[in-house]
Image 1: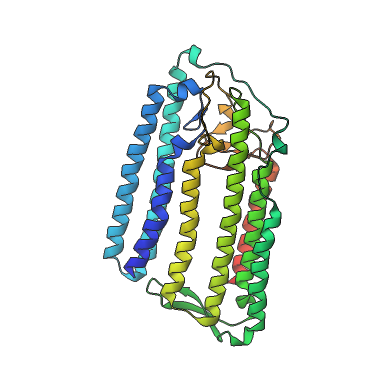
Image 2 (image 1 turned 90 degrees about the vertical axis):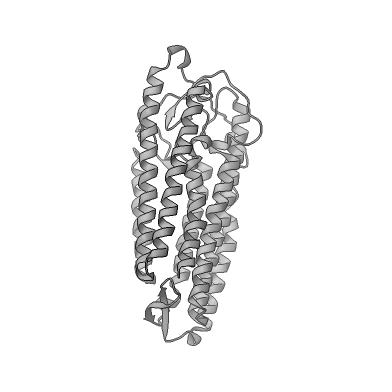
Length: 365
């Protein structure tokens, strides 16, 4: 059904495209396209023009990609629409990578051409009371998520005999069932296992927000520390709400196994709930900025570069610093946090997460 695939594309990818377009405007004022700069440089006419140019070019590219995707979707039969959407997603990712790489390399040249007077020696500010601030909500809030999971699992077991002998697992764009499996405890409780894994993942992310490395602007440290604390708290709250939305969505999928609702209704709900998360993330990014730079007023500093550690940031977004004990640090491109790839624990996190998700997918499928 064309309207479902078109709606999914528009609702999901317009907010994602907007966040990609706004990326250089959301970063800290000591970072420009993955390169450390002074605030004086960041607000210079040249870098202002670069940000505007990036926004215009990427905006045109993403608009053309979306328009082309919708046109091709309209001309493609139902069986081919998933391939069209997959191609559109890949094209968007590749486009974003090319744009970021091009402006990262351009920014390196611009910084190298700057007069020494604008490249001031960096300094670091540390707030010893930083951890005493309210920076994340308690993981106890996830008791609510666990409660929803337990209720869903309990109802599934109590009414197990009422589930159909053949359970629908996959639908096409017309809402028709394309794959079914025989009823079993494993199949019926599959969504609950997914819920458990997702709750654990969201709790880990919440802990990451709390424990990640502090980054404070030395030119106005008190304001910067306060902004960063609010930044973490807001994303912690968003993380918790997003976790509940995903848990409820899986409960709805399990409910559909029992009552076999129309496939179009199931697809619409499972589309709109993730779309709501994407829209919330965009609004939060635009109102908060990386590190909380958009929160409250801006105290213009002396133009001092915070830390000139470009050598540790490969291509502007991969952090590799064996001398830094921190495992989680703020991203330079985009909003949120990344890992220090020089720490073995970072690779362990990726491997364990991948293994668990793969195992759950195999068990629940």
